[in-house]
Image (cartoon, rainbow, N blue to C red; front, top):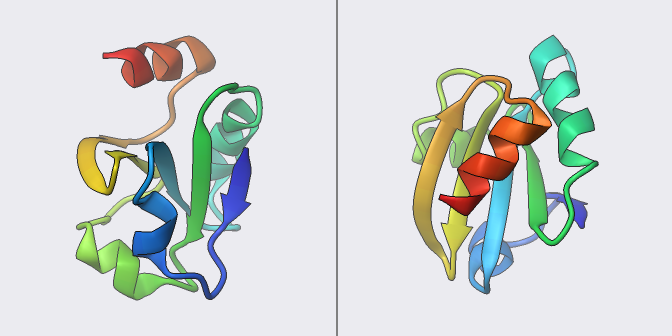
Length: 96
């Protein structure tokens, strides 16, 4: 399930279970490619955050390059990856 952060509370969105957070921008080519891969994933909640609209959250997590993905479990950050990953790489990254 993919959800786009609008005016919701970020902490509320990541507090339960595993959530993959995708920091992206509409003008970013690799972000679009990663977005297509994310759409093929199953059994993972995905929260997409537009860095142009939510610079404060991007800064909070040290996002300097996009795409950047973070994996949270019950509100705690487990992993961070910068750059594009294909489906196989992403599935492996999610399992580790």
